[in-house]
View 1 (cartoon, rainbow, N blue to C red):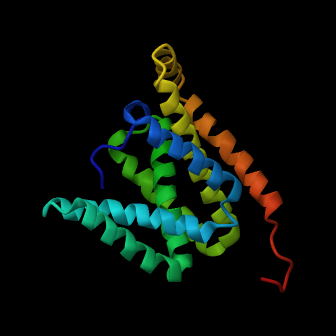
View 2: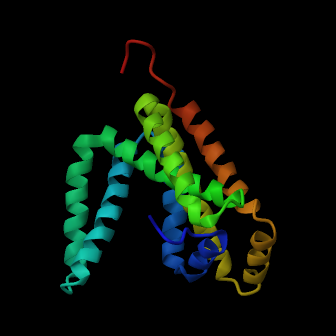
View 3: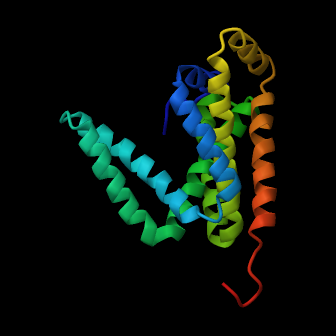
Length: 207
């Protein structure tokens, strides 16, 4: 388990350090996940797995000075494993989101930070199990949540590029810790409702 769970200021610092190109990509991908998540979820889940595989591959390749090669191999292997095992990939994706959400709620409740792993474990188990029970709803929920996070943090990063706005942005989130979760929750709910209406559940007996 991590010895330090990122706090709100850690996330804002990451936004400050993000490049404008990365921020724009996050915004665009966030919109795609929010609006079209369910219709192309196999591609998006595979993309998530490729990103994770590339990161792990780069870490392994770093010791042999083959970062690019390791990232490429890791991405290919992750995609090859994920696509035919999509239901299990959704469960893993749900577990990861659940862990992040559980740890965040634990920190927001001002509970002991060294025990944030307990909140993460609870969220991991709950959303992983939910993925197996409510498959379609879970896909829409996860893509909406991921899209909202990407969109919000991409926009925050772009705002930090304006020197006149940066201190105000930090001040708002530092003094009102509930603002950031609310800012993430609102687009996630909009995306959830939009996808539910655009991609209704199939009638009984149909796939």
